Length: 251
Image 1: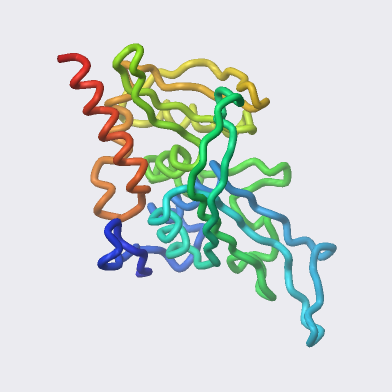
Image 2: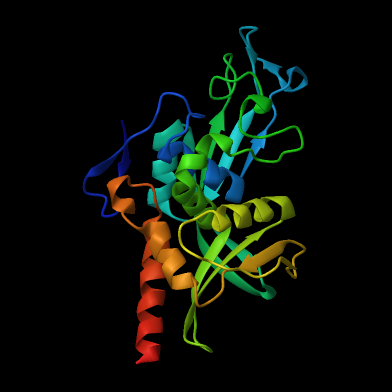
């Protein structure tokens, strides 16, 4: 068990984690979903190693994952350790680069040591292949947590005032990752049709879940998440508020 701050900050939430960060488990599925959605794994090959003052070799391999939800960042740190940094940034909106937004950003960095990165000798020992593509076979029984991590890492939830519907979409520079997300959605127990991949104005790709299916898909995605603590409270609140707005619009 590891502890992460609760949503109110009053009491820590116990996060159940396996000893192996690659084992099939809800916590590791959620973590690697976040890494794929808004993170990066750097290789720890010998050429990247450095020597410390005492002559020991230290690997430069590291994992870095970014989120704008503080509690989610603490949960990710509880899963694998590492160091958290907080910053406030302004960035272009993915679908329209003429719009900027300012938000908190929490960066979790996990560095390798003499035993490697998370006990592995290099990035190839992690669920990432030689081309940087993610392999999620170990987490096949925990698709909900994996998809939740991916949504919180590279997805958006909004209320569409023009149609009175809830919008759920995924945005990323890696087309193959989004195709993998679509495969995961195909396998979920809630029917959730989605659009074809389209290019964004910033050069990446995106797709949206059909508006009619978004409420059921989003509700399934966050169902019973309090039991594990593996979720971003701000993202769940955004979903709940969007659902309420959609219901009020129908009335």
